[in-house]
Length: 556
Picture 1 (cartoon, rainbow, N blue to C red):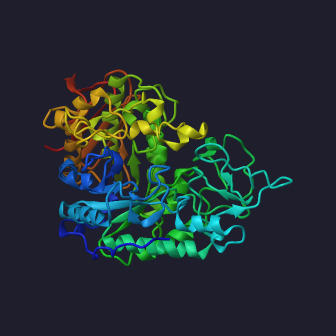
Picture 2: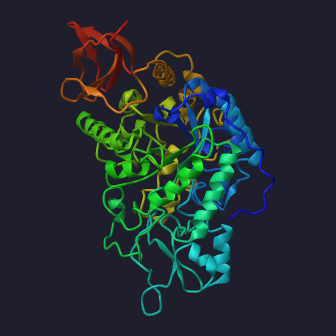
Picture 3: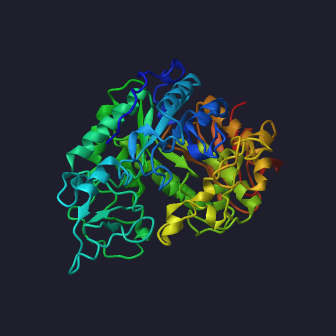
């Protein structure tokens, strides 16, 4: 799979500050870095690994436990690096293997762990295997490592089945010799055939390569997609994307994926330091998600049901209860996430009316969205388990919904169907300073234009400012580390609360979240630890403003 590489840096191990904390992943706060949009070290307008390394002190001081890096592998960038041409090389736009090694080492010295993205469902069409498969033509053994099929119709002019791409259009592309190949995403991302033993062998080798480099784990992209139903049967439905995460599909969440992950787990467990796997697994139910985190498989799985929940107390409580109930039998921690690189930032989602989904094209009420986003963050960080933060959400960044068409790079945007294709809005480079050509992102411009409002949302503008969103995150993460009743666990004790309000106890800690548009009066549970809005005393209780979360400790 890989081309010629320089010798990888010598294997190394996490520092004592990282390695000594057992079961760290059960309550970890993991920060997603989208490298091209985080920090640019060389002024070319594109973020890079050296830029990430330069900002490690900021991440350490924020109070996170680990950094998840979106793909930085060698790639033609047809889908922002999720089309990998070489899994053992760093794309030159991000640096090289020595830069990756330096980042891993420095992160460990700062007490941070590094989780890298792994993309096993598909490769780039520029991957050596796929290029040879095309060049050698029908009958090439390398075509068996992908899904090549003859077409239907009198002359094979129709796709082999009716599957639709996640990015819109057919999930099949015909090549010059008449055969078709499967790509559940862009045509530049052909799906691997995981029934072929060479694919499994190669990925086990890739795992060892990066584990030897010192990474602390892997986030598995499209973890639900590796195995397809026997015979690749028709789905028999149009608008198939509406079924994603809601129904059984012949190309997602097939039971055969679990044998792959049990093999991978045996490899991971050979390495010291509690390395972990995290699944990106879209499943019809949270109970199906729990199958991925059984004791001999993966450690965590993203909770997309929680991410997709509306700002509504009843809906949130239902998702919280179902998540905790599903994870408890398999002994896995729940995970909670509000934003990532594929969805509209929650400060914008919550600024809009409910029912619009996770990709939204309108700015909505910015003040309302930020107020709800701050409250939602404190609620998320109070729940038992592990939490994920997407870069820039600690600044309260909204989605950039008015990017000109000519600067967009999301492949789904150009396919004209499928996903809405507006993911670029959450990928705009983040601001570090009030001024400068890219607000401190780098010495030049930025690969996507930044709004003029970015300066006042920057790290510089918010640092040390009481009540700023950045300081709210720092305070919440500090309290989470020091309060024994926060973090790991598998249950909450629900308390009586007015309609539209969530209230629960965890030991000596109480969290109250008002999801309504009006102030409510609740009991005063003790000393206020932290609040996303101004709380006042009222008739022996506490007046909690609209869209506000309060943390209490019941002991002084």
